[in-house]
Length: 75
Image 1 (tube, rainbow, N blue to C red):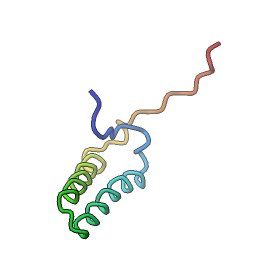
Image 2 (cartoon, rainbow, N blue to C red):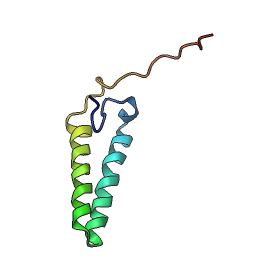
Image 3 (tube, rainbow, N blue to C red):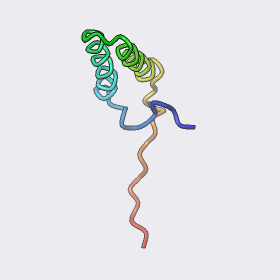
Image 4 (cartoon, rainbow, N blue to C red):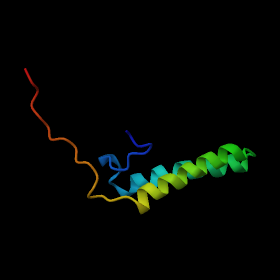
């Protein structure tokens, strides 16, 4: 079964990428609250909290999957 947010993907190894994918939904949630949409604000802030937990508390860079080695094309 696939996870909702695959924190083991090698794309998320750089710290700046994890910060970006946490800050975007957090900012959008704040924007939704500021414009008077508390339902969507709660959804996006919940997503940001889920991402923050997965990327900063449960993240292990050694566990991240390594990309497969380049293989020559098969004839």
